[in-house]
Length: 558
Ligand code: NAP
Image (cartoon, rainbow, N blue to C red; front, side, top):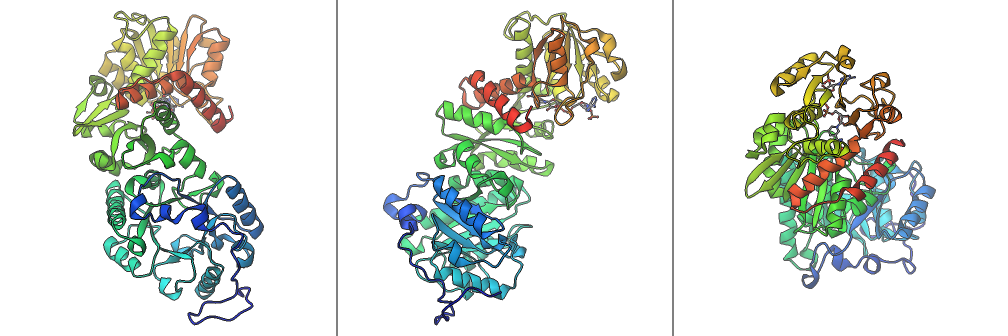
């Protein structure tokens, strides 16, 4: 690869080619005062300034330049240019001298998760050349850092990447990185368990807290990145662990590392700039949790109620459930929502539980208080509230409007158990059915309700039809668990499915003149109850209902 050169190398072997004046360039000190990245003792306050480095990874120079300009217009102060993504030979002259923001230059090898296809020799030459143009930062992997001596004002991010596991000897690696004349250290690794993630974050926090006590050059702060979906929470919480900055991408189609967040979400949804060491942590555990609307709802509640808290997604497998619940207080977690597939598995780890959790056999909310792990089920209360209100009653009425009404519950899984329990509890006459007849039979025995085979469910003639199967859910929007021909105008139809809100069952019921309660009511209701359990404060469902409906429409273009 021929780097564009017109001079020779200096005594360090650095090419003196691309030196450009930076007269018209906003230096990092102007744009992002150095005190923020490496604060002097008198102004070491973490959490007062947004510090997100937005990564640009695209295949052509013109796209990279255009995106960089657009990000600058959006007010973004720090950008990482991933030169390994360029399909053609990188031309430093085009990318660095006219940079509109502070810039990190990175040329990542394939073994570290990058796309660099040319030789290692040419990669090192490119890095040396880039430094001559004096970008604010250059990213150098720990094993090659000695081959690229410090130059000019460019600050060195000494990095380590492990896309498979965690480093075997983290303290040893950190000591090694300190020898490479770093301004910052970046360690990106892949935890497989919550315990690994926790130990990693604690180590990084300890190093950053230690470095805060040091002065100037010695204050080397560490950015720790947990790669993978599970690590998303750690990226959001990085400021809580004293990290100086984090990385994000500008749009969803530009996510180049597993678990990387979109800038807008990091700032808008999770309010990264507001997170500090006092921020209370809440979240959702499940697998997957990527499309959960709970972060949207709870973070908005916190904003409206001016509570210093953040709600993050924890995508964890079965093996990590016990670890997460054990380490939750250490991670600053005060409460969690629980979704599929962990609603049953969490129960054995609770120290206390609402009686409904035992009766239903599912828990969707855990509060951590005074060393206790207290479980609740807000799914059933929310659904029952929606149904009773639609019938002109109230869940707090001593005698329920549901008393002696005939209810058919379709589906005997998690939601079915919660709804059937709620209906029996409020003295409705319940019949349970499921395509899995054994499951439905077991549930009906457990609750002392009726059972009907799935194939003859229309024979029941209920007052209330409750769908707790995924039938009608995106993308199978043309399916329904109960035919329109069997619906009667006096019926109430409840559908737990909320994506889309207007399922075929709900649309058919509306056309037949039935009263309907949608899954959005249940979803918003259970979140309001959770918020009350988490914070002791009452949340209003009305704005949230709109927010959730809009989000669902955006996601599924209903
Ligand atoms: P789940 O535990 O998997 O239970 C669903 C039940 O329906 C299972 O017994 C399942 O049987 C059965 N089923 C699946 N496909 C079927 C079909 N084609 N015909 C008949 N029965 C079928 O799921 P869940 O947690 O109860 O959730 C059910 C629905 O409620 C989902 O759409 C979920 O999104 C929704 N939900 C909404 C809220 C809310 O806040 N609105 C809360 C919880 C759940 P198999 O296991 O044999 O497939």
